[in-house]
Length: 144
Image (cartoon, rainbow, N blue to C red; front, side, top):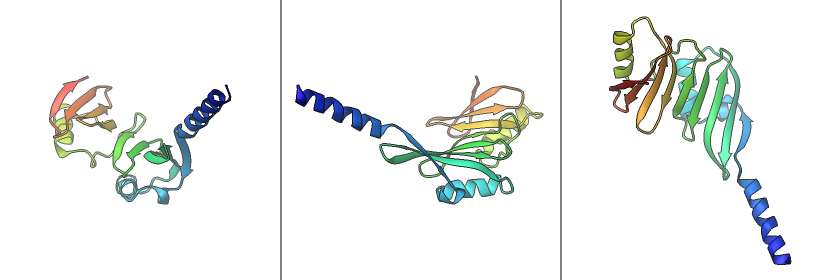
């Protein structure tokens, strides 16, 4: 019985220590790529906060919120995963040129308000509320 209780305690303690942990950090503690991204596309916008999320003691993502309401998620190496303008237009220089050209031609009065890069595609939301999908090469796939 003592062995069983010890194992339950041990498993409980291990599982508690492996949950995701978030920690507030400064902009200077972000990976260099993330700092460059922010300084390039949001140069004069102050940071509200930045956090790092760790699972199993390894950083797997960073989240940043800027004072203009823009939220950015970066992976562990500092590459952007999601940029959310919260219904305001985003700079589009970080997107593949094919995507920005397609949007400018097909939806000329619209701007990108949210962009997410996934393993095989880009998901883009524009100001008219449409969600567009593009492959990794920047070719249009569909309206979602």
